[in-house]
Length: 452
Image 1 (cartoon, rainbow, N blue to C red):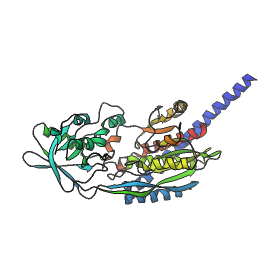
Image 2 (image 1 turned 135 degrees about the horizontal axis):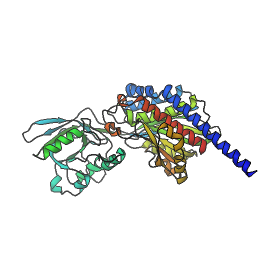
Image 3 (image 1 turned 120 degrees about the vertical axis):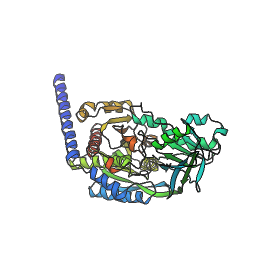
Image 4 (image 1 turned 90 degrees about the vertical axis):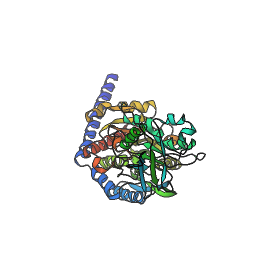
């Protein structure tokens, strides 16, 4: 009898694996031959454009997304209200290097997100530091009444470029505070981007109430190289004009769609990315690709007439770039509703070729992820390891202890060519790579729904 039972269990396991394999193949076939993601991304980028929280474009993106969700006939589509910060860079933004012979050399410059305005033209001698730690060790005499230039490049020897980004983030996040402590009039940073080119990269910076606010901007990596070389032979001044404005908190929304669970409708699997973007470029990779991954994954499952056991919920989060109010409010809201959340997936690393997933969660959930490797190996996914889930879904951990958060991992080598830069446009997203990412996320949703 025991032998018979073991044979039955073995046969069932083999059948289940074959059934999973066949369904995953169907997911990829639909994504690659009948996909909607690329055209939807084109419309988001070209018909709406860049979508900074609080802007008219962000408002239109919410309307656009809700209508798109409704067109697919999901079980439920709705908006979750959220208050978000509204910062605007203004109409005047320019910078120059003035050499010792008084000649002006224009640079490519963007105000950092959250910066104050310059109140006219700001001009001062430049002092260069190669690392934020160098600035922290400087004397007030070195810095006072000058414009600090933080020229720390991303480490090109880091294979995973997100590690290199993490190593540089502090110059953008805290450079203005540290410079102001020593009496600086302003700060400029080398853009946090991997290539040396003419595209400046913006991004969020921080102030603290106890330290005077000073204007902060990023110059392109090529301009940073030129300025650094110049300072080796002569003194120079930097001239900039920023017209940034802060309008406080304004109303916006997370956009949500669901396929209801047939067995456990009150147990939720969330998948999403952030609808907002910086106000340069079109937010194509960051994070237009991520929201399209998430929507298309749900659409594919619906097209295949898949009936999930748990409720599958797609969320287009608002305000990841400069506050994460969408993610924070979503986590509190679903907890207050008494929902049970069993897993969440986020895509926010661009629309490049998929490589796998990270898991931020208990060991048994990491084991689950690693066990998917044989089934996903034919689709060139090989990274199934412990790591970060994502900014938008991270607040869920505060309210649902032990929830596993899964972060989509694409190839990272080109992401920081476009991150927060004017070059983050639709034309720089590869159709096939985007579609493969949609299929990978739909596959993970399927496995979580089947095995949790």
